[in-house]
Length: 260
Image 1 (cartoon, rainbow, N blue to C red):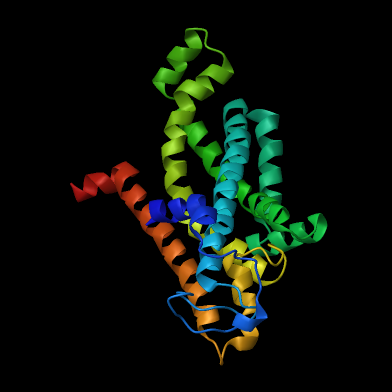
Image 2: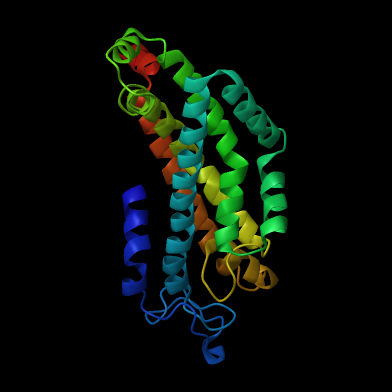
């Protein structure tokens, strides 16, 4: 399911039968037909084309958030855990400051500071979630840096950067992959919810959250305008959650031992 969604996100602009932003009021609110498989919206835009095109915006945002969160968290958490002392104390107090505020509230505050737009929504979600991952990376780094093979690398004269890259980060990435995959659906809901509030993608660019917002006046007369993009969000979030569960079953050694 995830691979299919990624393929649609990549190939969307080439397989959409109509321009997803092209309005034609003569075709507004048409029912499903051979010409328009899912019908048209209130501006006469092909709904199937808009949902396909919205896949790129929604999944692309989640991928960028994933890269940003893990980059900041791995950098801050590994430095704090390996350096210790004052560096660790300062970085963890910064993490504590970010973690005291609920993520959605913090994201809304960041958007208020940065301004609206999809790029700022992505930055806001990264800034509201990195601290939790940095804490995890720090804890894993603390547990790994005292292992015998790390001590042997230190005695052999390895630099701090080389030891982090070769001996500590590989043990951290597996658990980060599980946690991040479980949060992908959560981040997608953040992006769609902020776009629904008018803070993310600007019309006429198609995105599932803003499509639901645009369709609110027609909830009783044309409910499919809300149901279809909502179903797309549901399928994507479910796919990411299933992926996270599968990775946890595969990569969690304690759970794997219980299963076997």
